[in-house]
Image 1 (spheres, one colour):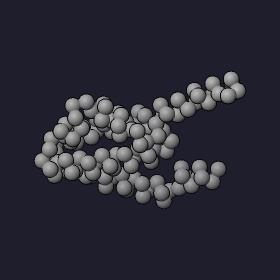
Image 2: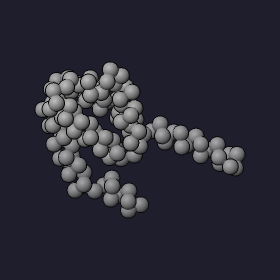
Image 3: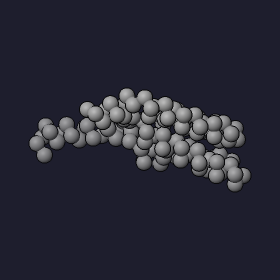
Image 4: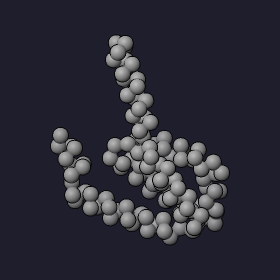
Length: 118
């Protein structure tokens, strides 16, 4: 139970996380327009699948910002970095984060195992 309070009701941690998020979003605003647009689309898409406290997803977002900064610095357009299938690009990013779909899969398998005793 203390883990719950340490993670979800730790005001100091929440304030620092919010500051860190704002710093990273300032980096997004400094990107070229095509990168900003795609980042925001990816971000809203990915949050539909976020699970738990969302910190896994934040790491993915911060890594994405870094990837986009490198691409922009190399003079590449955003779609050269993501590829034309941005949804598939998102799927690859989500592989390293805990998602609701993963939770649903685990729940389904657990319920079947419990019912069938295996």
